[in-house]
Length: 608
Image (tube, rainbow, N blue to C red):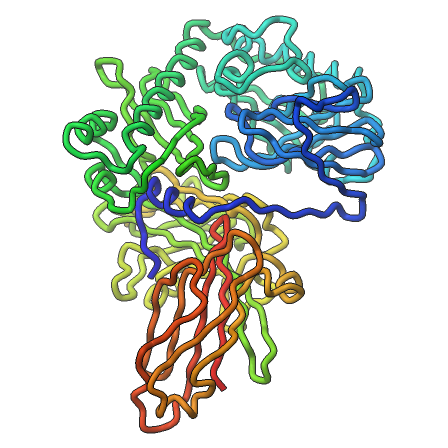
């Protein structure tokens, strides 16, 4: 069974193996890549800041009116520059990646008049484009070669002006000047000015109904924007400027607490007086993925060099004494962009902000698995599935759970607040030593994880599967825990898939990129095993950068061996033969490698 540790630690441990990866394609339109520095920006370039309360880590792709695309990498401060030489306006821009560890895809637009100027990409510019398109901005970008002539300077200005008036109370509270252009005025992702306003605003888009909801995290009030109309003019209600500034001040104070936490954990878990100083940063009511403070600070899995940065408010209580934030997490200066650390802070009577953990009674971790298995005759077949490892300590009262996310079947649960969802019902596993794990209701006695193959290549024996057509990068999955009376308890836990599984065709075309390849097995057949003094194997590593060997499994009738491997290992020896006086009936060996984003590639070889 894969080890389960609390969310903060599991994020850290996962991060140690992560490296950047990328890919491309544009459905028939010309595609090029460029990454110019801001110092080389020209009159044909567009530069700006991509942020959603925190800098976006990822890429910006520009689409011109003829369907040609160019892509550039966003810098750590959210800035980007992309050259439009040879392209024809108007232009659509898409920023894809994560902000404070949460997946985002946001849009903006520019005309030929904007060349050599600033164009920002934020949730607000995404809404500006949606109001011109009359639909979510993503639908306009994804249509690729459709007419985007509606993107004119006049249309951009009208949509921007309407939105600016509706957000004026928050903008004024953060000191954003009356003449500030949400689309074109330069800003920094430093929690001041416009970036501070982004911290305090939440934009949610309902694609089915064509509506956007803008919520003030200061007052809790919301306004609705009908995407197909620019006639919505009701503004967020006025708020006390001091309340806006207090929320911004609280976020800065929380940033300072995180800085203290980062310093304390710079060299791993401290001891003595330094450990006591570290404990002082936490609330006595701390709870993180079902783990109390003693378990978190007592973990041996806590590596050195952890850094939690760029907090963004996700909830602020009416009295201002409780804030929930999400933030980026890095280990040893390696940025992790496919997970977010979600934390709750509480202000004590002395005005100190204390860390309360994520307040979740359980956790969820995904593994995206691709299997390459040799068939009789020597050919390989491919299977793809996602494993969700979901757990909660039994003493915290969770009896059942609901896993929700794209690609899961539509079900009616009868549970208030979760009546009809894309999901599956889970119960506690009754399999040996896995009582803390949650698995599908129809597999309680055997499973220790939620194992979901892709529907396209689902084995006939499996009823549940994931609809691959519904998956995309950063698909979000949530688990809600229930007590014995089917009442929701604790905060829901969520995770995201860094990327959908590769297709079988992709893997079959270049298997050496993803999988190990066995070069020798000794003995080579089952018939030779009873007389062999040693069982051994060797293999070549995947050619893709950033892949590391992780686990080997060997089985032969009554012999079963599993072990962790060094990342660069290319051979293994059991050191003994098979204790059998007759032919071995079944024997196989498999090796798994880990890649970024929780992806795992396993090669299985059956002995003839």
